[in-house]
Length: 161
Image (cartoon, rainbow, N blue to C red; front, side, top):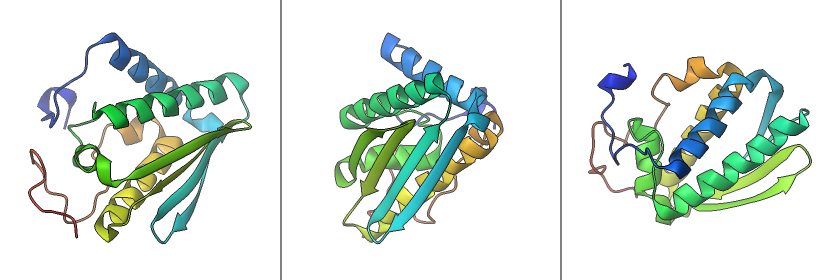
């Protein structure tokens, strides 16, 4: 599915903040081979570290995570054409996100008390590993998602349990 065929669940962002976030994401995708990501699966989510030995790219990564946290807290979706990301923003109030800056990048902990949302968090983690491993090639496709996430949806009809 190319960009002109995408069905955006929460609209498309074109404001300055969105363009800034998009530019950071683009740089990370372009330089993906300089990123490393390690994840520990938790019973209720994940703990992940994403880093780079390139100091500039580490700063870009940190700015990206701060920007995504702001988008998440405001419900300003990104990639809302992707069912996984649409679901993440739909259930954002039931997902806890904590992060802190570490040497060379960021450590993030995403958790939820809802087992179905833990599936969503794990799928998001797989997606981020794909971005780190394959860059733009991974970003052009829908992300892996739990079976309960339906597409298209506005919003997802099934309630997580």
